[in-house]
Image: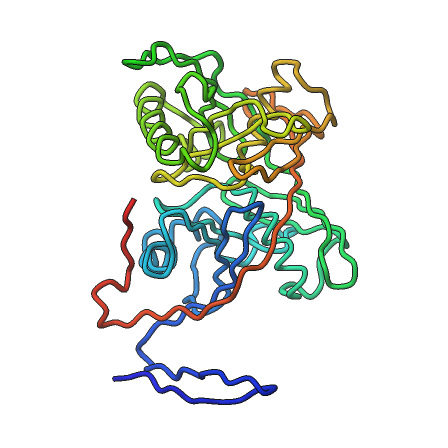
Length: 355
């Protein structure tokens, strides 16, 4: 069967209406970026996602619909560093919406850059006609409930921030002996996902785009070694107990900022933004060290020089850990919308990845 192309005109512009066979899957998306990091929001074409909780829905997508994740994230529709989100019904009675996060190696537990972009999209599109609380969007994610706040002028969101899940230091002052480098010191902290933090200078890394290959290689190696050395357990939910990424830190290139963050997560993905969950975990480390006080903001820049602001809003007990509630702020923009087709006869319909 072939697709049918129909030429139509609308406001003096010619476009093509594609009529596809009924056995093809068509996934609609809106694409955005937050401080440079992409987000592909799946807005239509998905089958019903089963499960009562977000973690149950996440398992259902993983076990039954993973071809959609790989097809949307991987080439030829995406690329090795693409990131995605599926919107679902919320888990909690007081939440507005649920989210499942997608990347090149599976499914995230929490994603700050996605929350910032999703808030803008949900509010500006009218996805949820009546929020439970004006100026507040409550999202259920695998790591818990996220409270996003926004300021809108008319239908345009001008400012977005979110209170993250309890974030805490998991292990401090750990070290690895790596041939050719010597002792590499690192901390492990949770900000919605677990990260190991180390100083870029210990790896002889320059955190700029021209050295991305070296950064990715170092991040993948460090992740493998830290995972081998540590058993990571979340204090409440076993599904969250794994090392998600490595974050290299350095002094900022813009002296007005606190520092620079470059995160390597999943299967060698390099975050173009400062990483919302990463800066949350860093806030927990700095607060624990006494470097920052409650409600003292710090601005952290990305490999591109884009920034996120983070501050500790409160302290809480989380399991056996002293945790903080970070507030993260950032900006997002639209980049396009798509209809992605899955032809059953296409041998590469589930995508492929070349890293």
